[in-house]
Length: 391
Length: 233
Image 1 (cartoon, rainbow over the protein chains, first blue to last red):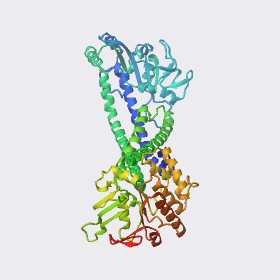
Image 2 (tube, rainbow over the protein chains, first blue to last red):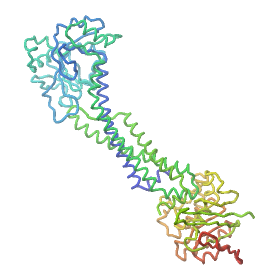
Image 3 (tube, chains in turn brown, purple):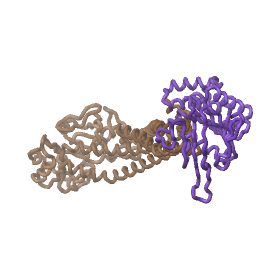
Image 4 (tube, one colour):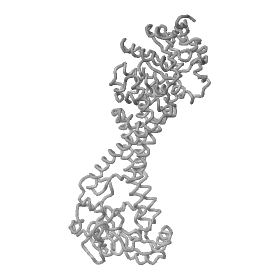
């Protein structure tokens, strides 16, 4: 009680001290939320691809982040015949260049994905429907949108939209899973094959029948089978293909994320440093300003431990207040930017419980640690030295 | 009766060994009888305040020995010193030294808390003692809402709240006008007379000193004279 009153009775100083802490926590939360978003995307992708193998034409680079040259579908039977393959489906993955994007986006670009209606049903990690329904076997002219793309396009279920020159009825929206599907228009393979053929002036596709077109074959791994070994088996058993197993995917994702992570880590480190210095500076100043008060308290009988305990408790409360302010303003900025970027289909920041708890705990612990040094020093001073400090 | 204070050869030097060495206290020895009312006088820089701070265990002597009641201060463990300040000594400062964020009653109660009283008990004791010094109607005023005389009364109440054996006043009337200074001295004399508390005051004011039973005169960090009512020592 006394601690709260001591804080309330010095409103300017308390607010300034808490603001100093708030600035640090604000920086930490904002940069942390950016890092959390990247983590989610990376982990979402790694998890999604952990149960599947992507088979591309052998001439491809094997880079998952490039749209692949088409694969010949006469290999589908050979792939399905490899022991350990639970199911294999052809898939078209191509860019959706004319998606109506209203400004800069910080996320991945929109894609058109064509797949067999049965593929999702056989997927060990199927895409969940958030609203509407999935498309059905034999259905044409329909699409299910990823959550981010739906926001970006602003279309509702039952409405039509133009995708690469063709009209599609939107029948459903997939739940977000932090993968390529979030920004994709997923449609029946036959529709995607037409769009793909129309969009690519590729000699290898010009003469091929449209029903033979696919950019990759997605292989679902049977239970208990090692995906890495299965990818090797496919590469050996089927000629001129490149089977990418989850480990390769993980390595590619991590390689791609490394630079970005380094930048975010650097920014987080700077935020942490700014935050820490801000908190330490304010707490050191707060204690230094009150050296005389410490002297008075000691002169009338306060023990070193009592002085220390009171100051640490006060530092903790100020840390809590500053932390709350930092979280509030950080969250405010994050929500604002996320709202702005959400119109492009991708939020930039992700506030997670661990980020909130971590930042909040950090503000309290740091405030206490920052106050500890000067408070110990002040508590151990002779009362007369503390009393004379500001004279 | 056992003396309240025994000071033996107390010394405190500043800038030791340098050209500008100051001998604030240079071998000061005296005794204060329990229940005595003592004035320490002397010119500025004579060591009065330094002596007072050492007697109040706010500062340490570099040499010599100080006994307060049964405690030999220089031999007491560090942890015992706050207890001496809280229980044995009540210190009244020239500049009052009240905590600006606490009300009159909270300022007084703060000292009581340090002797192990609960907050409620401390506030009750503080209220009683403030009423005793005539501030019953100013309990919830902050220091900046009180006159200098009233602030010094709060400081006196704070010094008294733990019923210490010794009250030390460092120029307790130094910042007060004549009327208020007289009232504060009346209060201190009454405390000494009625409660038998040992009171030692540092003062420049000879009128104040003349109201005391013993007058110690200091000069250049040494005791120049000790005069007890009616005789010289």
